[in-house]
Image 1 (cartoon, one colour):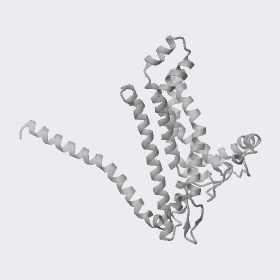
Image 2: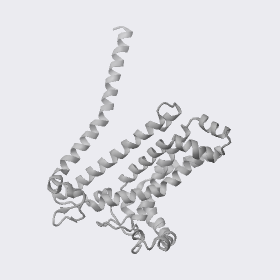
Image 3: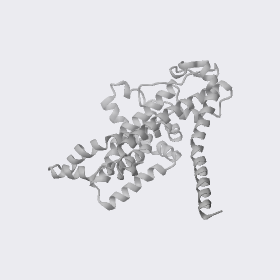
Image 4: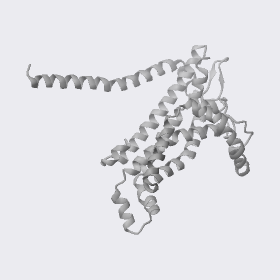
Length: 313
């Protein structure tokens, strides 16, 4: 066999192997969806759509409704976004535009390290540090200003929706800040230079030029953070209270879809109980996939056509 023929065979084998590796990922995804669907099918056929809108969770009577878990997942995640987005985007703007070089590298590294901390460590920190801080400093202020609203009603016993929201905010902050920083760095320097040449201050250039230019990518970063918050399990389980109820107050305990699976899967003794937990997993999987796909689409839209923007992907 000639050297050219050897290279051709080698290229073919290499391409086939890489194609097989690439197909493994969608195959695993498909297998996961099929397994979740098959295991959840008894619950789906038994309860139908009302599974998503009822609150009764009674393993003894074999009646299950996931509304409290869905509500808790959405509320805790949205509360986390409300807390994390201003800090994360502000950090990204500071690191991109205003910080000195030595601080940019140091702070950027520290922000990224937040994503490497194990979830259970966040949970322990939440129990022993965050909840006492909330009880001493945050909750009294909320009660004094918003105590007349249902949002801040009832007694604060520690484990609560607000504690879960603060923990999730800290956990998703590095994802939003890092992607936002990359998207802001992808903005052409000519845009900023043109604004400065027209007499704008640095802050005006950021507010009127860079943020609008990078708006789609920042929204994508926020939705990526939302996807991370939706699926978080251990830290939230340790601080949210794990109560099967829907409450309008963020001071009350709640439940999330990930937490109920982690807490009750080992205790599920009947096939319908297991099937209900699998259906919750299927719902959570679907929501997370849709949110992350939408976020990736937004980030791709802001970065396409720019060599610098490719780093945001």
